[in-house]
Length: 90
Image (cartoon, rainbow, N blue to C red; front, side, top):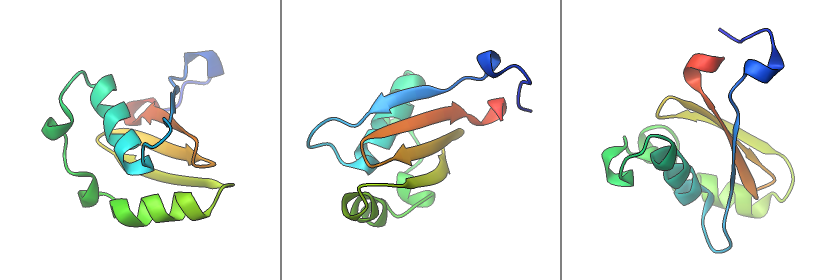
C-alpha cells in the first residue's frame, strides 16, 4: 500500500561507485539496508541475470531499469545510481 503522503514514502538512493558494477551495487545496497552480509541474501541471478543487467546498464547511459530483489523495488537510473524502495511501501 502506497502512503498517500509522498513524505511518508521510503525511497533510498545508492550511488554506484566508480568501478562497481550495477549488479554488485544492488547486492551491496540491499545487504547494507538489511544489515547483513551479501552472502546471506538470495542470489541476484534468481531475480535477474547479473551479466545482462551490467551489460545493459553499461551500454545505455540514459534510461531506467526496474526489478525487484530481496523485498526491494530497485530502479537503476542512467547506470549511475539506484533508487530502492521497500516492497511493503508500495
